Each structure stands twice: as C-alpha cells, then as structure tokens.
Image (cartoon, rainbow, N blue to C red; front, side, top):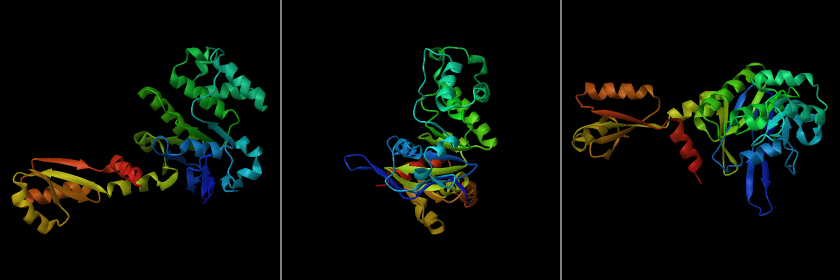
Length: 302
C-alpha cells in the first residue's frame, strides 16, 4: 500500500528527557481522512510539528508520499498544506490581504487566492477585516491558506477546537469535500464523535505511543465487541443461578440488575428475546460500551 504519511518508530523528547512521542509508527493511506485521536497532552501536536519539519527527528524515519522528509526538505512542502493549532492571521487585514501575504512569501500564483476562498466558502467575506470574523471563519481562512499551494496532503491540528456546533459541521463538510476531490487529510482531534463522523482511518495516541491504528470500520467492530448490557430483572438474586447456567459470563451488578457481555449490538435484541421467552421479566435495558467506553479504556491503560 502507498502511504501519504509513514513514520517508523518516531520518537521525540524535550530537554528533560521525557518522551513526548514514543516509537510512533503511523501509516496514513493515500486518499484517506486519517483521524489522529488522543486526549489533550497525548503528543498529537508534537507529532504534527515533526511531520512538518518544525521539530526535527534525529533519525531518517518520516516519509511523505514515499519520500524521506529529511532528504526532501524544502521541496516536500510544495505538496503539503498545514494548519497547526490556531491560524496565524493579521486581524487588521482582510481575508484576501492575508492570502496575498502568503502567495508573495511563497511565490505562489495569486490566481489561487480566489479559488481557495471559494473552496472554504469565504468568497463573500474576501474584503472583510479578519477581526470581524467568527472563530469558524478564521479556521476556514487558515485552511484556505494551507490550500494555497494546492497540496495533495493536508495536515490539520484540531481544526474544530473551540467551534460551536455549526462551525464544527462546516469544517466536517469541508474536509469531506476536499477528500472527495482527491486530497489526503491528516486531522488531529480529541473529539471522538467528530472523528467518527469524518474519518476513514483512525490512529489513537496516548502518552506519546500509538495504542490503536486501523480503519474506522474495524475500530467500530472492535469497540462493539467489548460492549456490556445491563438488564433490569426483578428478584435478580433469586434468578442468577439459573441465568448463569445459560449465560456463564453474566453477573449481578445491582439489586435488580444483571450485566451480560455482548460481541455485537444485534446480540442485545437476541438476548432480550431469549430472556423473555424463558419467562424472565425484563423491566429495562441499558447498553454500555461502544466507542466512548472503548476509547476511555484504551487511553486509561498505563
């Protein structure tokens, strides 16, 4: 498989020697939207700074579109657009003036300015002062700046951070549209629900190390396989021995509550049908697990 980003046991420590990134091996398929997921302080931004050359690895172990980053600087950046943390904007200038600064500094065609403003939906605000922009508009302008060189790879660090629900939806739809036009997108986030709605591939980082990496579909299957469901059953203690005869893994967790593990969500309906068919009165069902619980367990391991 061809990778837009590949790292091989990437590590980085600051002067105190504490590893911020610890033997990280990422594989970002070309054409994917790769969600780089982890809690705050997990090492996401440090990794992105290494991928964009802002922090240097002491080994030749970062590859962009199959080429060594270390050996391809600065040419490699012609195919990369990046937005790291908050966009650096001149608030007293207009949107078009901010873009003109970038095209002048990087020697890019000025014709791209109108094109990227249209892509991010800011054509009507091109001549407005950036200080008048909402946070979502500023984020979209930052993405427009990253798109100026027409990159094949877009690297975004928490682009939805701090946005209201409408701003988050705007960024989500923009990323999907850019991906449909052929761009590979590497996006970091601590928002599990947003990653699930946006991405095709997932990598989970915690305390600098990669805890999980696969497709979104595989992650959902893995998460659902670790689910639990609690049935509210009157006089549960009296029924428990009989229940455990048919379901050895069940256990009582409350006065009238019995917990059953399940592998797939469809198993919950089947289990309910079996219990009712056996004459067990079910007064309520509470499903636990799923992606959020799976993610919490994954990132709470030492």
